[in-house]
Image 1: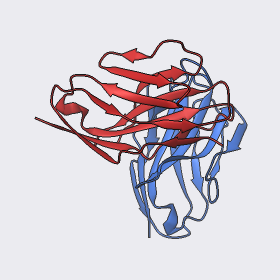
Image 2: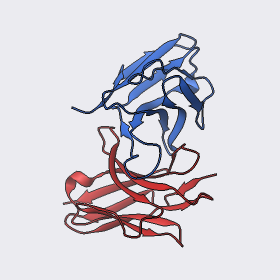
Image 3: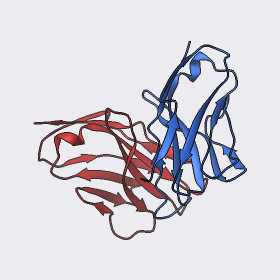
Image 4: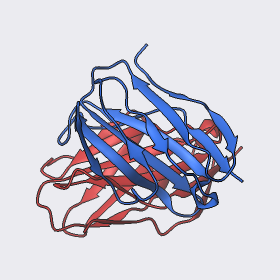
Amino acid sequence: EAQVTQNPRYLITVTGKKLTVTCSQNMNHEYMSWYRQDPGLGLRQIYYSMNVEVTDKGDVPEGYKVSRKEKRNFPLILESPSPNQTSLYFCASSHKLSGRGDEQFFGPGTRLTVL
Amino acid sequence: AQKITQTQPGMFVQEKEAVTLDCTYDTSDQSYGLFWYKQPSSGEMIFLIYQGSYDEQNATEGRYSLNFQKARKSANLVISASQLGDSAMYFCAMRGGSYIPTFGRGTSLIVHP
């Protein structure tokens, strides 16, 4: 089954404790991205990657890091989480960057709470 | 810069009726794509329909159609014959030359029996 998986699905942590949210896709997609969703703000892109070892900032990259060492994996790293990073996080992938067929496939989401 | 505006925070519709969810966009790109996604209460994001800026015909996918009016920069989603399972948040999004998608704030749709 074609899918994007994220782990963990739920995480409660404390300020300053480094954490990683994993993301993996099995569709051989080149483009992957991370979003955060906050009430009333829709989805905002944190980082994206167009291929292995190619990453770039989205609209809200502060406080986050990513890496793309393999095509299928795109982990999101919070080196020193703060309460304002409490949010619902989505990983997504797509086959193309533009044109028909570039719709994104989303993971199930990770609900993060930083105390 | 890209911008997506969804002016309807919430919509109500009777089961089996059609409903239109509004979306207007702003971009200076000539080539762009417009998308609609559905987010049920379970939280996942589900792709519904795509419209390319150069597509001459409105996109359709089953009960979903996209009313694309390029000159007015609008990309409204039409759901025909609403079902109870259509109750969800709906997001309009676009991606242009920057490859960074922009999402609207969403419209909550409630389908009444």
